[in-house]
Length: 457
Image (tube, rainbow, N blue to C red):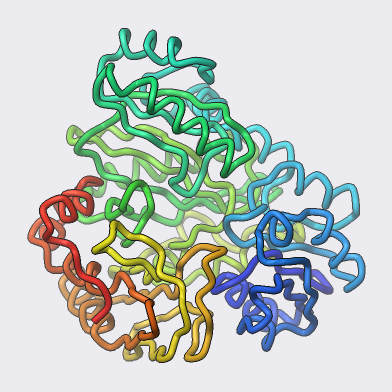
């Protein structure tokens, strides 16, 4: 196992990785920007290194600063968490050149699957169904129009280097095509440093279901069930649960087996998530693979008993999986809500500020992953996630009741700070959600009809 792991991230995921490393007896090095000098992760890590000023490009996205921090601290591995450089093939390659283990798939795999348009072609080759669209990236609005003539509307334009639900624009008619192409290209350039985009058919009333896989470097792989991520605002997930409600057992097995077989066919190593759109007729279309730990991994841990960060570290260190598919027996129902410093009454605008009060929920089978505390300043520089609350119960009805109770226990307040808690409680109470019949349009429909406009309690 590794001697020292540098955690190239911030917030709750930095704490999450540090805690697992501590249980395994691994020394940890936390990095931080000047905006995060009061980070809770700095109090738990064995060493800390400042890597630059607040802007992410000069700190958490600064590969040179991270490598230098690893060198100085003697770290022999880097855990990238999620976001930032977690799926950056160039960074993984630099780590390999420096003799530092990158906790994730090798650089060649990241390069192959990081381009979403290319990943679709690769997955089609190994047998997964993909949505019809452009066969490669498109270089002009005119090329988008050619795809539209072939497929019709609605379409969705996506960033080829995208991820995390960013860099996507739905197009419903010809008149909006050029604007959508140019705005998606601009977003892709600004967020990912790569303005290439591609086009595919957009499914209006679909469910977003993803499958967690885990593979080692010895040809072994398992799938760990699926998660329903259909509650989202502009492709940003707000709530996740497992198992996906109402999904027939046979379809659940087909999705899991197809994902694991695809991963093994590719020679994938590490944790990964296959994301699908599930149509009303039971067809599931591959969207993308996330070659990293997901924000919503706690729900899988709650029903399987596996510790995914521990498994990441073991696989990266060269150990074979301790689990086989027959050993994976998910039990009960788990659900996670993301509590963000955002104002749903202003279309989820971020609300940075000083947290005068922060009291998380507690109780049986209730897990809160957070880096927040009273007196912490919520910075405008990074993702507005304050906490993830995950609950487990034997069935979905009990899980809904437990999550509703947990959300009422949170006390978060501060000048100008609003959160998504009340909106999430409205989602839990919505008839479509309670019946498990919701789709990816639920949250946007709630906002459009003013049924989901709650802010902080």
